[in-house]
Image 1 (cartoon, each protein chain N blue to C red):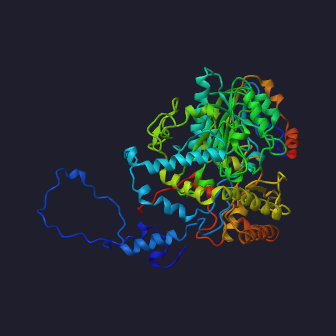
Image 2 (image 1 turned 90 degrees about the vertical axis):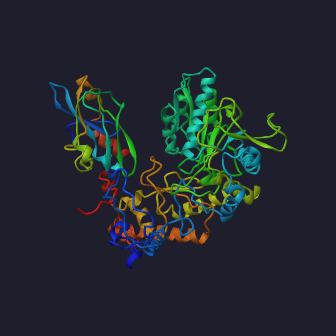
Image 3 (image 1 turned 120 degrees about the vertical axis):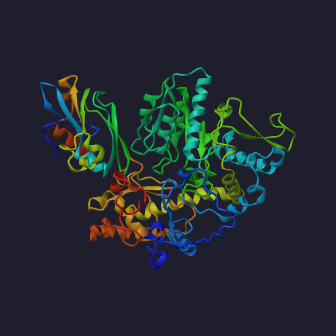
Length: 493
Length: 129
């Protein structure tokens, strides 16, 4: 907590109100006073803080300085791919030709923007090995929902309405079951085998005439590449089902493997993870959907067509169109356009070789952490990992220090906590994703912090159990906050 | 050691016979389950009068770590639900086997209890996991 008058962030704006203090002096009345037509419209209990302008600026600036971000500190939040966002992405998005156009502007006035969308569709199709791309979905789970709705539309179009089950591995992303349930499917959990791959026997049992498909996260949330993935796709296809790919972990595969070549039918990408657009804080995301030719007629509208390619318009012009059996619109207008400009810029900046180096360095960094830590943190699946490593604090817990405690203590070392207690199949899971953006100095400092905390779990477990000790607020009562939420400031009675 | 006056499931629920004549059992989750969950913050429970079936989802429990399904260890009709858990879900953390009971069920078939694990079988099961 910052100290010092109006920069003290421990006090809400309402609590610093002083009667008569103000930021703006309104001019004196220079017209005749008129009575309100209906005085009952006035209320006298509108409680606004009375504060000056510098006080407000100092307060919010002090709050902003407490922000934790990828531009300030290491952010190894597993599964979220918190990588550096190059500033040139923003510069391009701010170009007036992109930033100042209106989504209802006629197509002939927006050709540049449409061309960019078309090229991005082509790039994402090439990167994933998929024929159809729609950029209209606004987040990962939004893309998932669109994808499973497309699967349903496909089955129904074949007159096949008995496929009610969606199988989802227990190492998949947590949003997958929710997306399938929202699309009306019955979710069936698919077990992992001892190596962390999909259990093929369990899949064989589920593969039948009522199976709509499976939703696979590749690499899985264990940070592992499923070695049976081609066989998984074959089994599902033979049973008449479709394979959905959660592309949230594409950072591990960029330029190395195309999901379309492996047998996936429809996937989504998280541009705010893999393609370095901003993320978190409620900002706009983008979860484009890419699919095989059989599902392309069902893509969410709109998609951008190049003139001449489908009989629309003249060669060299671009237009918006709706696929013939589209599941419909998933958003207003054309998706989060500014985010799409940033992703396009990222791809163009890196080029073929650069794209490939992302996955190479992301996987290298995760394995560097794995090798440096597995002697003191239990590694439940002792395999080469992909872009993230899932460790367990089981050994520390035996000494009274849980995964949560380790995560909280990392804050004292200036690092963001890893994802905790996920995937659910790993006890005391700590899911660490360094991304390609970090150098060896940062990784070494992080390794040292985790080694120090492990030593503390021997020497002073209670100290770790009460961490963090150096943050503006120390250990929060999470259970109390969830059980008895107190979300609103109220004046003292 | 789990109490040996009741029966257990692999999903970590217990069922304890309260009254053999009326086939009434109490149902809850085990000490092991609440310890794995961590601080429990919310229960989504069925209503009295609802029917429940063996190993069919009957509700959800949310902890600071995760949301998990609750499965009924028995088949029958719900006689009562522990309303205290609405405001005090922590009762299940503090006292999972007694005041943290979740519901009372009139069994369809008293013999169903015998098919569940005994306390020693359950302890062996969680020990091997």
